[in-house]
Image (tube, rainbow, N blue to C red; front, side):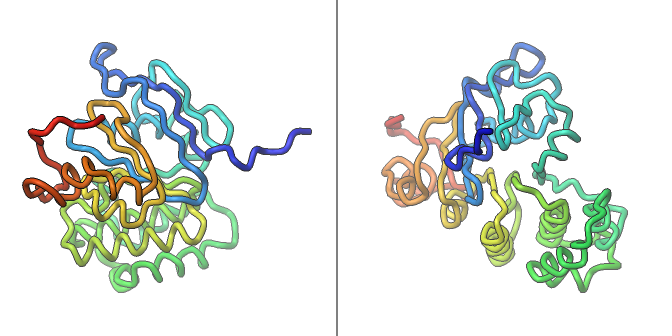
Length: 264
């Protein structure tokens, strides 16, 4: 009997190619590895393919990836139906948060517990209410009447009630006031500390790298650069293109077109 490799990544993506309409390449030979119990950030401009990457892993793009391999906890999951990917322990929080807007906060959270038969639901509810106390005060309020920040908190809380091994989030700070974004990112730190692996797609590079252990820079469907959070923050190109620490001022979304030739 073989023992599991402790050094193997929780999520292993190898040379995947995702196409739209069987002819438009969104991902080109993309590879990345996500270690368990760490936070990994994928950074890049609009159109880089970041959302497509998460949707490909989650099984939300039919018959994709066209090529390559996706393994989760040592098992192949590429081209599986979304419900089978989710049942393996991957939970995806999309950019639009995916809430049932006509339902209350409590009802949305109860849907996060759907199918669970264990005795830990109350404990998990206490955990998410501890992360986002405002949700406890909003239990009877319809999701569509919440602020954008509260909706993001609700989406994350519902996701955590699925007890994911891997939590994937698409632009969790998008459209949020800085103070609210900090609450969301403090919660991500707590979720990571509790043992959940996080794969985070963001345009706010400064905020993402402030909590990530490792990061990937993605452009035009390819990984152009990778490294520890510290290494990326010290990289001259990353500083100028994504962190606004050199040359012209960066855009509010954390990137801009740049006249100087990149070194990747």
